[in-house]
Image (tube, rainbow, N blue to C red; front, side, top):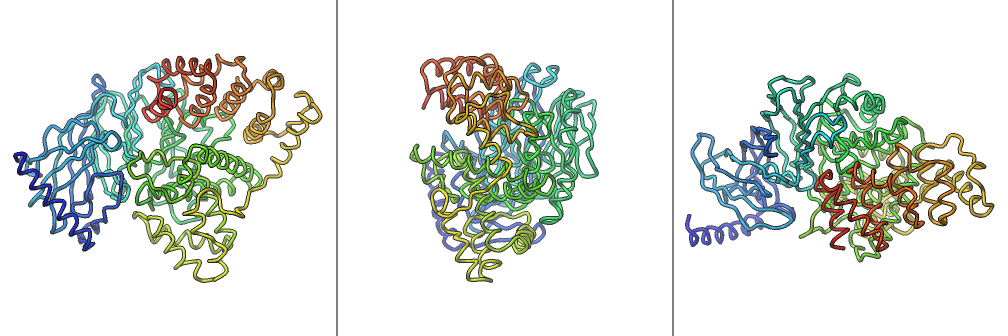
Length: 630
């Protein structure tokens, strides 16, 4: 098609968009039960209101030498009567050619590139119900991290893993990269001989010597849940429904740490309905993974920073498991509704942990989360981001990662705790179980949830509806007036200890820390750091050796404390931490504290230059922006 033809075509396409959006027609594939969707996602070029992908088949070769994925993706679709041009999201993909199911080459073209959202791929599909896109990724794809042997736990073989959330799937698969668009998929993956390949689908338990694997995901998922990993990986079962994948040197530690996984699955099912995804496995990744965990269906990705030897961070597994209901089963329609994924999951995690480890244990975690949330809201207000302290976000034109804050997780969680208090736990649990069941394998936006909440629960009692203050929680900035702060008797004990350190000059050897868990120490360090001077910090370091602990939660809090006190006594440990850990949650507070002084900023930049090759792009981009652009 020549330039003038394309202009005419695009004009007609826009007119068709307007007409169809006004009419809000929906067409259904009777066999597959997939429907066309309204297009209200500000982070996707795709057009599922006209052409919707409902099935995907990947055929990819992992090219370890070039650090690329090479092959093709077959897409099956349903279409409206008004338009048949498929629009896919891509980001720095090399599109080689497009064919129909019979092998006939189809016309295609790319739109204008956006620095955040990538590039739209247009494919006219008149008379076609499937297309095959031949493509390859580029080295440095935003979603993929290629690790050298030195960057892995065992330091023996290369390793590859993906991170597709929020809008990075488009950098390794041409797709409709919008969470409301769900599809089934299958795959054929070729990797190195004697390497294992894994995906968010059915997975092998043993290595195939020739490196060839097939996968099937017959339950519909969103694009951000597409996942791939490959390396020298072993498997161990932890129960009839679950197991652990990890490098050989990490497998025993991981299996011990996550020994309660089957219990978590069983208890979660009792709360809100049967686990629907057949198998729940966890892959422990090398240290560069930028998040605590990623809830890829059937295969959670987890950071090794939760392998602490004391099971103090197993809540991460409870959280990712809970996503099997809130997020994977019922998914936020857009990233503006992110709290529907993470707020529900944080609440569900809380209930699992309370059931397995008791209410006093969980109350400590709630207090820590409440305090973190208050700090986040205060910082966001200071940075003129007050609008982002609402649950319902407006991230138009912005990277949806901007919405990945404590607000979605913990303001969302405490809103649901508030609703539980208003209606009673029995009523609330019945409501949530029905919510997950009635919306399974679908998506939900904030307005739809509010309507469902009112119709199915709050309208039953006028006092409930008034006390719920749902609009204030969802559309109001910060925390609503009267929000109930959690209380922990265990941490009240720590408060007394911290107070004595300053009012009575209590010495470290005089402190009664009997029975202290990681959560006690986290709370102690955070409260202590608010008043502590350099001499007091030095005294605590000598007594408790926080810088030498193997627990990253304690390391991070303590490193921030020492930097804040103007000390350099543990710079070796801080540098080692920043160059071996890639989890953004830990990196950002340390770098943020360092850059408050000129010397600290220079040192932080020098460490980052050494460390950045080992960070995933999610962490690398965040730290780089902080050090060089803020």
